[in-house]
Amino acid sequence: MGLFSRLAGKSIDSYVTDARANGATLVDVRQPSEFADEHIEGAINIPLSEIDRAPGKLKDKDATLYVYCLSGGRSGRACSQLKAMGYTDVTNIGGIGMFSGPVVSGRK
Image (cartoon, rainbow, N blue to C red):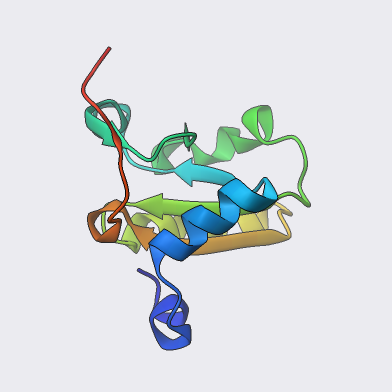
């Protein structure tokens, strides 16, 4: 989870609930194999190594994006890069390791 999230007391669970209620996009920046093993339902996968291709999947630069990875490190870097590309509402919500809700598991 990001430092701000910890200080503010908002958990990844709260962000996911908010995303589902308000139409925010959940962005998983882990590698495709990690995403295939387990991810939060409704999330899209844009690996950190390919974050420069985000505009192809995320057209609206003013949309609310909640970004996560395994522990919050990669998602923090992804948020910085997305903001530098002009995305205006980007939040590092931390790592899936702290998520207590159901996940999509297994490769299809």
